[in-house]
Image 1 (cartoon, one colour):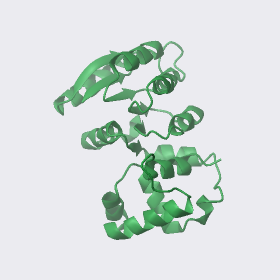
Image 2 (cartoon, rainbow, N blue to C red):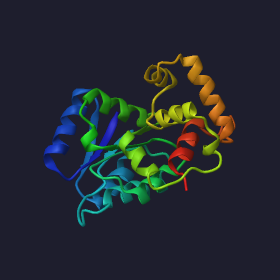
Image 3 (tube, helix red, strand yellow):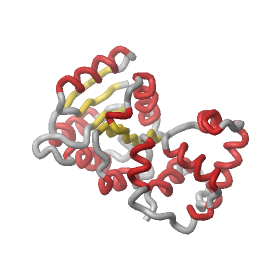
Length: 215
């Protein structure tokens, strides 16, 4: 994969580059500021990008805002946010884009190289990859809407794991259920959320967005 790495800390940036290259991926550009990040994303339009939230010049939310700006110009541009913080407002805005190709992980949660590469590849393929800690933070500021309130406890568990980016097979392994049982739960929760099966939308992405963007 062709990857852009936007991270202002040299040691972390260099470590990610070495890791990505070890897995056979190509880092086509790096960025250390918000403006550089936006320029690199639009110039290279990579297969996936790794973007830190807080970058110079103000060390606030430049990276996340650059990601939003880039995806407004290039819908569906795959981006994995990797940060020490959860910026709730911008994170929700980023997740509100139904085109997929989004991930959000906290740096403290990424201790396993295979986990990191797996999340990166899911995002590159147009899926979602969410840190459970990020999900918990986003949900803590909201309340259940009417449709989500109709889900059973098991359906909530399935949807929560779906929000992490897990497949039905992986969800089944986590919950000690068969893949066919998980398929039935997903079909049921799609119906309760009013998400129809058509050629123009990804039902899993829409369900995750409903879950993460509760009012």
